[in-house]
Image (cartoon, rainbow, N blue to C red; front, side, top):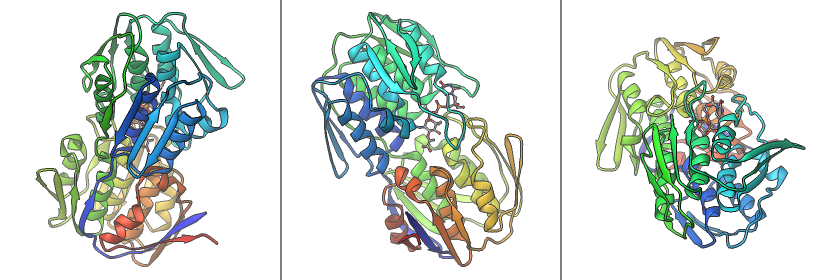
Length: 420
Ligand code: EPU
């Protein structure tokens, strides 16, 4: 197992290229199963989750070639039963269900379990499939979804925490090959859903309204191959922006989509961070003193849960009291106890974390529990005095392309080592 050793206290300076979005790339790869023709996806980040998704598609019979940032998939002939162990290991793989159901009218995949950030049910995905006419059964740990006929329907995907991102992706994919018109109400509005819709449209699907809470899909008989470029990763961009602010640095994010980052950039400005936009670049630097802010995570276009842990580090460095309320995943505060090892003073009160900021952080060995918690620990290590060892960095490699290389290029003293 590898760790990252970080000698903190160096302000990050320079430029960093933002990679393609992991959470767009995974559903896009799943969507290639909807056609028997070849598809090409470009600007795919080099991540272990992407390789994993490639293996899942291969296990279904697709030819997959991953070369640098380009993924080619040819799902000429595929089967409907996914590899139990492979699928169970990656929550994001749940979106192969909608593609298999659309193309083959059946899908058998292992029921994704909960994970460290919360329960992660798929009841809304299944409700959507059922509305299209699918029968659903859970047997021996598998979800079996079968439909003699898929028919367009009105589907409401609102849940207790708002809509569902992968649920919307799943129902949208299945509906592209259903008979008639499907309307998804309370659809997720995340840019990753829009990216998927754009790819499906390039494949011949008829979709309107993606990016709004009402998506309309008119089923077609067949989809064809297409090429697509993945949108930039707004969470990776947010992570580097927060790291720049936390180290009192000055960093240009190249290829970031500021229009996908309104809530994050707004809160950063409110915290006293300078954000300048120039074309497709964002320049992040500090102006004056940091100010405490309060944040509630919400579905897009609200503040994303995936940037909550990183933002908590900025709050820990800011004198005064800041509050984060987590409304998407109930257990997403695993980083709090690890940040405490560096000296952060944070209390959890129900769904809120109360951050009493301004105390200096000092390096310590810490253990990453999930992807974004790991990113927060790296940022904290960069801002802390002394050395921080972030253990179990396989979480980071799931979602951040070459994070140590990118940070080193910004001047960070960071090294990947084999853990003892
Ligand atoms: N939910 C239900 N029922 C469902 C589905 C979801 O109650 O059937 C609830 C969830 O428990 C949660 C909320 O709805 O409270 C939102 O979950 P959502 O379904 O939107 O999450 P997801 O689609 O499974 C994606 C990202 C996550 C990101 C969330 C929220 C991918 C591969 N994953 O998950 O990314 O946090 O949307 O934006 O796209 C990450 O990148 O670190 C990550 C966890």
